[in-house]
Every structure is written in structure tokens, then in C-alpha cells.
Image 1: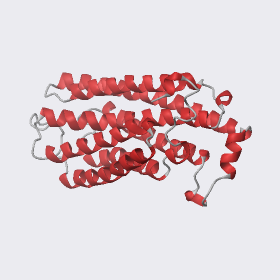
Image 2: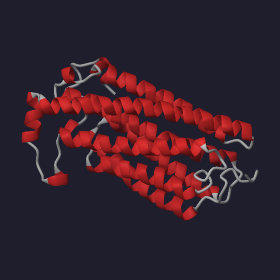
Image 3: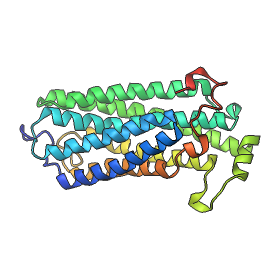
Image 4: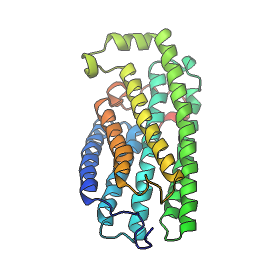
Length: 281
């Protein structure tokens, strides 16, 4: 790889600008939804959107600054860290949904521990990927390889936590569908709209599954990308980054725009105050 080019290619200004505009649109809408509903549990998701915007602004600027360690570090770290921020909100939504449905007995993880376990894991992933991303912003091959290995380890940890979360959500979904609580049954009866316009606890869960699937695909892509290193086909062809990272994460944000959990859960406070102390974010 050219010592003066940290990317291995010339980053596309056009592609970066397109995703700056796309992420700005969905993030601004998320900010409006957050302000309207006051759902503080969705703050990390919005921060993830802001990370994406700044990250792709830096990628656009990188076209004329191929050797800038600062620009490379900012775009690399922020784009890596956006999905863990999405995950933090996704974890908190499930905990609040379980409380909302009065169905704690149907969840394999106690709600008072759910957010603590998954968000703590997410913070660990966040720190690993932040540290690894920082090390990758180096001209030294050995340091870059170390950073890549740290990021790979972070991605594996993220996959493990995400996998456990999806299993937890799926088991809860199966149980609440088979043994619905009074609240779950009444919520379905009060459902308005037809088809994709329906809004109830089931659509919230389906939206979480969709977002989790997109993040998992993105994590697997990143894991393969780093496994084959800086001279690998994925790492040296920018199009894959936009297809398997930028595009998937944009779709994830749009899904949560359309099926925003606050439509069902509101600010998440009214039914949480009597519950676990660790769930009040």
C-alpha cells in the first residue's frame, strides 16, 4: 500500500456526499421524534446517526487528504462506533417492551439485569473498536495490523452479545405470543392501520429483528474485511463499504424512523418507575 495513502484507494466524494445527505435526513427526523416523545432511551441511536454524518464528511474530505492520520482516524472510528450506539438503544427498547407488556416472567433474562448486561457488553465493544480504530490510523504496518486485530476481537464480542440478545428476544416473542398477558392482548386489539402501517408490540419486535439482522450482516462483513487485511479485496474496494456498511446502517435508521418504538412505549418512564432502578435511562 502507498505510504501516502492510508485507504488503499481514493475515497469517492460523490458516494460520501450521498450518504452524508441520507444520514442527515434520517438523523434529523430521529432528533424530531426524540424531542417529541422525550424517549431518552433512543439518545444513543441518534448519537450513532451523528457519528455517521461526521464520519462520511471526513471520508469526503479524505479524497484530498489521503495521508492525514487525523481524518482517517475520525472517519474510521466514528463509522465503526455508530452500530454499537444503535445496539444500545435496541437493548433498552426490549427491556421497556417487556415492562410495558407486564411480561417479565416470560423473559429468560431478568429485566433488571437486561439493560445492564447488554449495554455493559456494548460499552466493552465500543471501547475495543474505538481503541482498534485509533491504532489503525497509523502509517506503521505493525500498528495498523494490531488495530485491525483489536477491531476484529470487538466485532466477535459484538456478534456474541447480539446473538444472545436475538435469542432472548425470540424466546420472549414466542412465549408472549403463546401466553399473552392482558396488556399484550389488549394492545393487539387496539391496533390501528393495515399491513405495514400497523403499530403494536409485535411491530416493535419485528423492527428490532430487522435492525439486528442488518447490524449482524454488517459485523460479519467487517470481520471478513479485517481478516483479509489491508491488501485484501474487500479492504481495497470502497464499494463494499457503502453496500455492506453505509447502506445497511441507513436502512436500519429508516426502519426505526418508520417503526419508532416511542409510538408504543412513549417516553418509557410511566411503567418503569416501579421496576428496576437500572432501567431508567
